[in-house]
Amino acid sequence: QQPVQSPQAVILREGEDAVINCSSSKALYSVHWYRQKHGEAPVFLMILLKGGEQKGHEKISASFNEKKQQSSLYLTASQLSYSGTYFCGTEPTGNQFYFGTGTSLTVIP
Amino acid sequence: DAGITQSPRYKITETGRQVTLMCHQTWSHSYMFWYRQDLGHGLRLIYYSAAADITDKGEVPDGYVVSRSKTENFPLTLESATRSQTSVYFCASSVQRDTSPLHFGNGTRLTVT
Image (cartoon, rainbow over all chains, first blue to last red; front, side):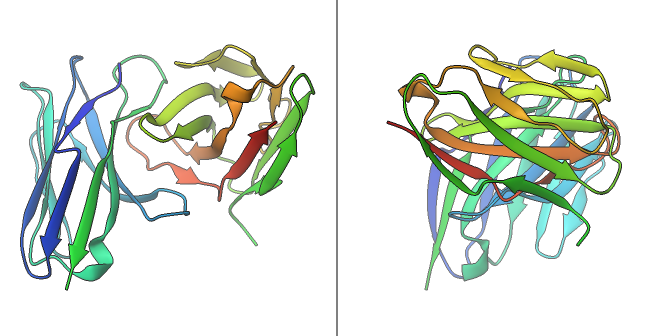
């Protein structure tokens, strides 16, 4: 039930771009994205609903392809503050909400 | 302050003891969730609740018990703690399923010795 994310980890220099992918084996109605900094709770970034609408949050955007049961998170011109672990979240059945395996993102100067 | 609070923040207990982790939210959100977070496993769902008196199992419910007699509280009890239950536990709430964000508490770091 847990979505699979790729890559597991990525290191970027400030200003570089990154893409994080999330893939589910179940049909999805929506996908959530969260960021968690070390020692803190996950923080909500955005929700994407069926329809493939791309959402944006400053320089972070995402897309959702419900046919392929996949979502991608795009981070452009990365900043040091983007460092953390990114999780996608899905609800394939009932009220159970599952998080992906996580992607560790490190931005270096 | 409004929000979702967990207590305690840190807890050390011995194998075999019963431990209860508390979660309280002030938003009157219908949905509440308990997750555990371990290195290499991300966030795994233990139990969830769609409303007061409605609870159900998640991925890893064994060894845990929950209750929800009031909308705002969702305690998690480890009936007989084991070392494998050493983890960081997060409680979360949301207004609606699927289309509303999850709001997380600050977590409880539990160590079972």
